[in-house]
Image 1 (cartoon, rainbow, N blue to C red):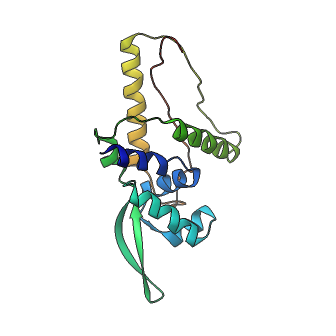
Image 2 (image 1 turned 180 degrees about the vertical axis):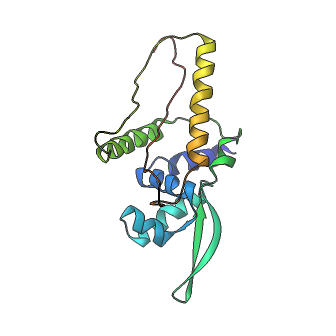
Length: 173
């Protein structure tokens, strides 16, 4: 992936609404109208943000459906292909991290009360073996929730949040 393409992907995913869209499009292919209804925005706004994500390669077309004499494109988030793309260099992620923080605050406000949560905030020193194990467990958890994502509001499904930011710190930080 070129630096321009990487920058476009970073910019595309650093908007809270687009992060929500990526989550929706992980479990199902959806049209702009379906995304708009689910997120409580206009179809024009959803279409704009979907175009930004598509132009950045973060979502891909996944069929069409007939709608009142017209045709609506459906999109999906190719999370599996993107998660194994080693050409995506780690860029300055500050904007993306800020968007994740905003999204976490929004999602926390919508949290069900009296349900179990796992929250951790840790900046510490661990052995390389421990760090490797933690990274593996977090990667496994991420893969599981993405692979098992369902269409929004599917019968028997739970609406959940998983956000992970795990990284090595500089010794001088």
